[in-house]
Amino acid sequence: MSEQNNDGYYEAYWPRGTRQQKTRALAPRLDTLEGKTVAQLWDYLFKGDEVFELLEEGLKKKFPGVKFVSWRDLGSTHSGDERETLAALPQRFKELGVDAVISGMAC
Image 1: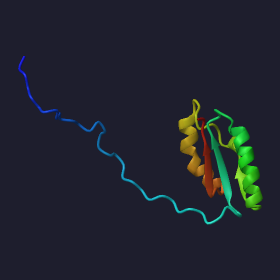
Image 2: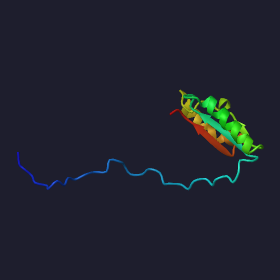
Image 3: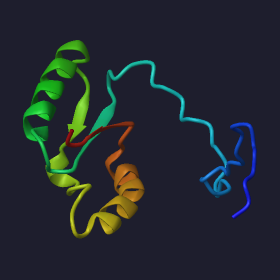
Image 4: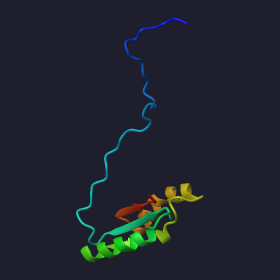
């Protein structure tokens, strides 16, 4: 076995592959939630039912005209059919007039 002196320097390789998708600009933020429709997405794991109730209550106090599409009407974002559920969301949001989304997940 040959002894190699590298003075503590080693070759390293970046473990991540090349980027497959270009970065896109974020959607513009809403100025207000007044008069807007907000969809609630949840993975049905941790206390989302309680959290969304509190969020809805607080947001309605601040923005009395805000409307909500409940997580109950949209399906779990973490289930056996999550791929189909997520793929259908853009069309569902258009049909329901959704302006914003709150996505909750377990911690």
